[in-house]
Length: 146
Image 1: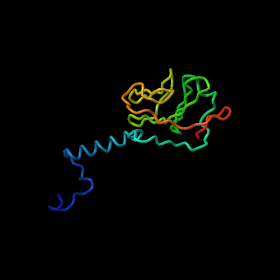
Image 2: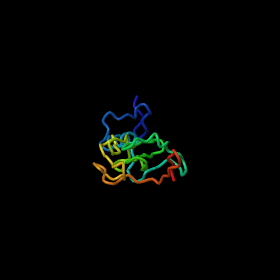
Image 3: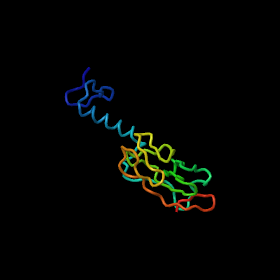
Image 4: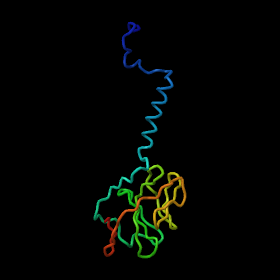
């Protein structure tokens, strides 16, 4: 038996087998937001590290390479022997965390951007902005956030 005209449909009858274009687009948009939860807008670095925090031992940072500290959202590099640098690990293209450091570049696996391990500048896009530099200190064998 059908409900009287103007009354709300029972909960089990609310599924629309032919959803409107607006319904489909809204559902797709909600899904895209959920899928991109690991990405940001590239507008900030969202660093999770605090001043004075030890980031790594100097011996853990290879020369011409580096180490991505995903939890802290920082990447520490050693462009030349004894020279340590740190940058935000948040790619400036779409906010993914960079994946690795090798052969003098900081690489983002999401879309292929590469940054110079020496200064964070863009080596290859699609990123157009450099990685923001982080101030660090080296105390003995420890690299710390300044």
